[in-house]
Length: 168
Image 1 (spheres, rainbow, N blue to C red):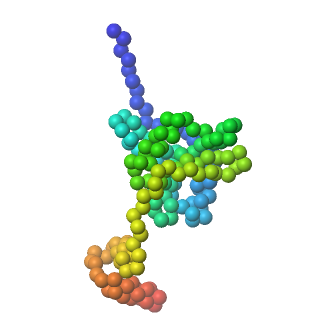
Image 2 (spheres, rainbow, N blue to C red; image 1 turned 135 degrees about the vertical axis):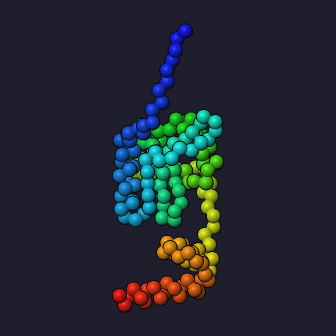
Image 3 (cartoon, rainbow, N blue to C red; image 1 turned 120 degrees about the vertical axis):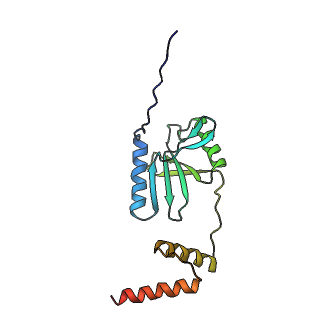
């Protein structure tokens, strides 16, 4: 009887040439303030039992929305370099997860062409007093305030802190 031993390795693969160009593109976007964060092969999405999809890049935009970017290059046929199973996986992932999934293709002329998969599902942003209250709550938590109060009380405290800081 022959024994077969399997060895599991936990390593990330190296970026290919196109992914390196896209990483530089994302880094430039980060430096000019167009996005907040990006990571190479940072997440893996479970699609079914023993079936996963790992996008090339995860990007967080300035509205704190998460995007999964799959990087492709233009083939000599003029079409993005996709295998059909990869297209199926990104479509399934887009149906199952509340993340913006997109393919970015490096075209022969050097520009990046984007293709979005699935519907962009977003919660409506609060407006008016709700938005102000949400922002003030965020500021109070960031400042380490343990208490909550009305919008007016929090604004008054912030103004008092600004006045105090201006006199120091």
